[in-house]
Amino acid sequence: MESRKEQVDVVVVGGGPGGSTVATLLARRGHSVVLLEKEKFPRYQIGESLLPATVHGVCKLLGVTEEMEAAGFMYKRGGSFRWGTNPVPWNFLFSISPEYSGPTSNAYQVERARFDEILLRNAARCGADVREECDVTGSLQADDGRVTGVSYRDADGGEHEISATYVVDASGNRSSLWRATGGERKYSEHFQNVAVFGYFNGGGRLPEPNSGNILCEAFDEGWLWYIPLTDDLTSVGAVISRENASQIQGDREAALMKFVDRSSYVKDMLTDATRVNDDSMYGEVRIRKDYSYANTRFHAPGIVLIGDAACFIDPVFSTGVHLATYAGVLAARSINSVLEKSVSEERAFAEFDGRYRREYSVFYEFLSSFYHMDQAEDSYFWRARKVTNLPQSSFEAFVSLVAGGSSKERVLTDGAQVAERFARSAEDISRAAERTGGMETDSGQRMNHLFSAPVVREVMEEMNALQANSGEGTEVVEPPLLEGGLVPTPDGLGWAEPVSVPV
Ligand code: FAD
Image (tube, rainbow, N blue to C red; front, side, top):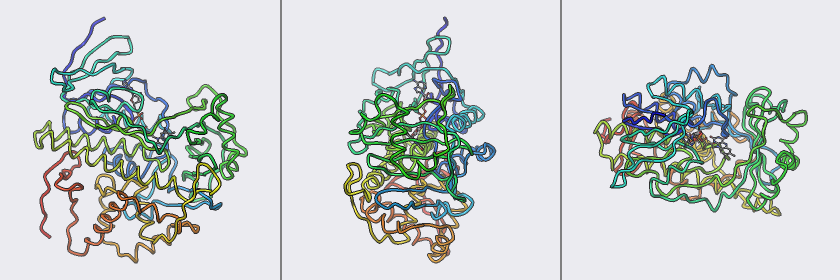
């Protein structure tokens, strides 16, 4: 069998949301990109609940907004949580966040097979050479250690090599290509959880207008997600602590149903439902464990890691696809800028690394705090911590964060909405909160300590400062996110040195 050798600008490994995002944004700038994907799409993946930052930010940048709308994905206005000791669920609506307060105040619950295929086909339409059923088997390295390409096996068993100026590892949590960075994968001590999940037909829905919300319900050993995917189909999963993992050995379905039985709202919603039990992609009860980690190196000469190949925290608040696609944007900017010789490699990748780690750290600290929030005193999993007196502005900040808008990256929000946000008075904001629901129970008392984590507090302070500086006559510019750092080019696809804009 003939073995091919090729040379391209960039080879992307993996066609999930991270890989498709970076491939699209590199091809858009005219660089030659080959994307190698092991599976034939559509393929199954978990991670169905999206954030507005992905839907209205990255998807808009990628040019798939209309396709997403036409796909008819479930409209997600926010989340409903039955968390901690309070028996009454509370809602957060994305519309309360200043970044996503208008027509962008939603996300979608997606069947990942369909969503990922939309992004992958779009990457091909934008000029990336997408090759499915191509399994990357290793990296190529120069004598000085620089990664110079990959080897792969195609569907017919042919072994090939592609040399590239950059390799982007977007191959998810399973592949080991990341080892070429010379870094380590550090598993989280905090999030040592296991998930067991399956699909149901005929499950109930939350009352309108929140029927498309994700519902998360805590029970003693962990929590359940309930994600409506279509009018009929629902994704249900239990996340439990590793100490309880022995409870899901053996019959997975029985284990999942046992956890459902511990809940009250999810159990109620599933009263008339039946688990999908056929040979479709939804017919299996699956398990994922050890999924929370971060690599010590997100890049090395010639290679950059994005999405689950680099890090993942936890399913609560649905940050996985956001982190993967945001990292895809950041990596594309760095590679575009270096290939176009507008920024040095060192500076471009320092910016990638700094922004990516910052986003990861904010969510990591926030989610750690959330897990410790308001636990049932007598349970193992939920150790108590009382939370009191949350001011309204903090709740907005909370929703901005969980919508994926905390970095203030213009590409993650809607430009018009951002401009509008700067013009809104505090009074408008509290009126919007009344209008949109906001805290629907006494949960306003529950969040305070979330903001005591240093990185989260820092982000909140930056957000307040940005709002305070947005008086009349001030031109809205995107400042560098990192001290001494770069700013995105106006098209969002590269980096530039910051310039001060006269007001
Ligand atoms: P992936 O989506 O994993 O894509 C990687 C691709 O690389 C795959 O298509 C794979 O086939 C391909 N590949 C792998 N190896 C090779 C190889 N050697 N050669 C070529 N191709 C290869 N995130 C959310 O946003 N919302 C949620 O509700 C959510 N729920 C979750 C629940 C659980 C239990 C878990 C564990 C995760 C959840 N996530 C969620 C996270 C989400 O699944 C991931 O963060 C997201 O899929 C990462 O995208 P990615 O593009 O990095 O990788």
